[in-house]
Image (cartoon, rainbow, N blue to C red; front, side, top):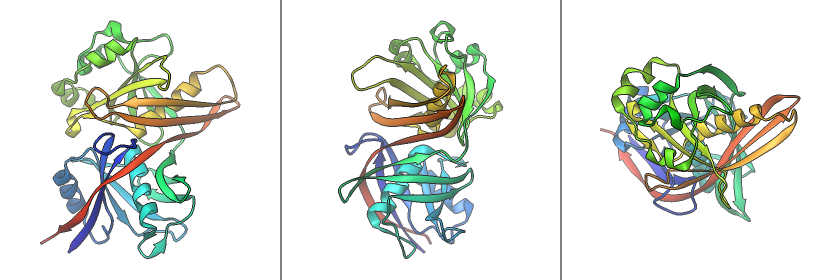
Length: 302
């Protein structure tokens, strides 16, 4: 069995930065175990597997795997997979040539807008598959221990560390300044022993900045998933923009933020986040950015 794959760098317009993704284009017939083994072989933060859609109105079924487990939803895999299929112009013999695609995923349907410059596909922007949900607060001491920071570095004026999700739950933690963010260092034993007890994917730290082109700087650690640090985490940042919109006093607004992630690990990524809020309720959240192709090839299963 020969599989075709492409890799792309997501949330960047430049090769060899951003968040790399592998997309297996003809995954029909693979078992879950085979998908997991292939994702472990690529050893990227995530690998996606494109399958025929269950419903003809949709573009594809997409399954997402980290090197160790399957994800119900994730940001950069959706953006990158939509980019690859739009550039190819076809998926399982059906044209992909409109302004958007719809993926079937474990978390639900994911509608994705294709970003073009004229006829050239430049990137994609997804709408999260689930509405914002905000869960339990998490002790600052646990976050500090896991991320190698002081509890005093945590900013609680806007919110305490808490679980938030738009399809994948993360602990979102605001820090007081960029220096505290830069100094953070994940402690794998704390993630394995303590963070894994919580109903979350992992922890994302962020700080709000006053820079010309960046509103937020973020870092996400998941050493228990074999991802010491992620260059760009769309599923966490889409929950973050939803949380920030929820916390704003205005009952109606559209909130847009430019988020930089991956800078400290040498893979700078830029994410464009947006949330819509009506009558005090966050009704939609979006995350998107540019992509660039990197590699293509085949996998021979024997």
